Length: 386
Image (cartoon, rainbow, N blue to C red; front, side, top):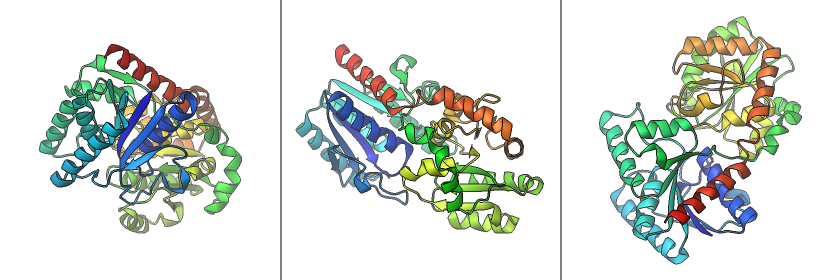
């Protein structure tokens, strides 16, 4: 098949890693012709396609495809996507992210591409927007969903959210968990000593990690507040924050005011290849975002054999199963978050039990080859229908 993927930007992030692995699998496993259309990787998150990560994947960067709404840029991006797709003549157009998804679906639908597919990595509308913005983005998504043949959700929670919002009927969705290269994570604990030494952790330290941009709605402030009673009762606990962003200075100030600076380490922005090593040095992972489709850090930690603590948002409950793979906490409940952190920090046998079950349950399910095989089945089903 000839398959074009469209995504707004290839920064270092879960949706982008998912897309890259999907594209490379289609080439390597199925000998498909694949083209990736993307805008510039603008922002502090870093460029996923740097250092040769794209491999043999043909990539066309469209200068006007930007994340922010801008009439001029969006008009130009519409033309650039159209010209690229006309030249490539795909059997399938598979879109990702809000802007790339809206413009890509519009253009592909008008061109009568046999299969137009969109993956929902996270909803573009959420409760933390103004009601006007939320309704605007909901209507945009409903309009775009009418211009594709099928929708892939990275978690059942995404389907439920979209159906409840009246975006599309349930029969238009298929859940396919976001795939990753699982092997480095299954071997992550082999790098335990290296990962801990790099950030100055001693053998007696219980290290709880968080992998997320230092950005609004990611829950770093909640984690810091929840850590106060934990470190008071268990001074050997340390927190490793992986990621960078605009909140770095304010979080540093919050830690200083609470006297927690020595208990938190900022790893900063790290290349994806180093994430398994970092996870290998942790004893547990916490995810306190207020919204997220299904954060890749959760299955990554579980595949590495670590227990997880997560706010009960979106798809988190599908992998964070209390008493089996970790502890699920009501969103924004700092008290319950603190209790969960303390419970795992104080019980190494519980950490081992939960982590082992998570690894057993989710390693195959989140393998990128499993994802790509299922995605390709969706392509073939839609081509056959249309």
